[in-house]
Length: 366
Image: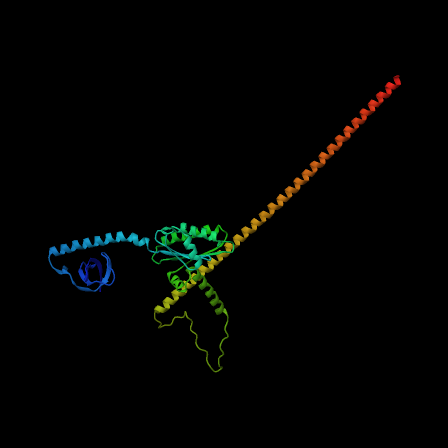
């Protein structure tokens, strides 16, 4: 069995260039075989590359160069289309609607699936989402969530990301920043939000159960908590006859002198346990952060409530002071009017007495 690049495709066979510079023929395989494609094959017979002579050697070198250049040109031509249609990450969003987005290398949405009827209704209302940035599409999704009443104080949003094992760490960092930005935008609605990252294997298990990766991880977490509670209960030790010697107990971490290297199963088991512990630690940390966010939000609500009550008391005191001031003004004005009336009355009495006195004087003169 050999490996090489397809140079010619015929009805019955294909001509292939091997890394050693040999031109070999092979029976045409099932399915479509394209020029420039690298395949694994069984050779039928050697081409005439074994001929000696400078002309044959030079011709072989030229053909090899031409073939390599053709393969490179085909690869450069087809790779952008391939990369734009390849999913590099999956992002699932669960509120009551459950939706999963497929993201390509350029952080654009190229696929969308629903895991329940509510999710299907949301997708039907989205328009022109294909090849759009994940931030823009997620913004449209959450806008529809708000319109449909799925986002309120009692809502819990779960965002799970599944990154391909082939993606680079720098791309993963950019993707995580995108998800963080989306989460911060949703947190403006004062709702509970949880973000987590899972694996391709867990997503496959979730698809078998017909649920999103986020719901699958949430289910697994509850199962782990139940298992840990069951195993934490102490079991009664078995009784032993008096004449029987206790068995020698060997610890798991004890090394025997003649023990060999760990088996593949043991290595896989230890790796799975380490991954499970790491995931549980991450989930516990996420729980603590979620609890801290809830406490901070509750504290902020309490502070706002106290501020509103204090403002209400201040307005009440202000109205009471204004009422007292108006009452004092009214009382003062009333006193002024009474004093003015008394003054006018005295002046009238004095004027009457003067006139009366003047009239008496005139009578006396007569």
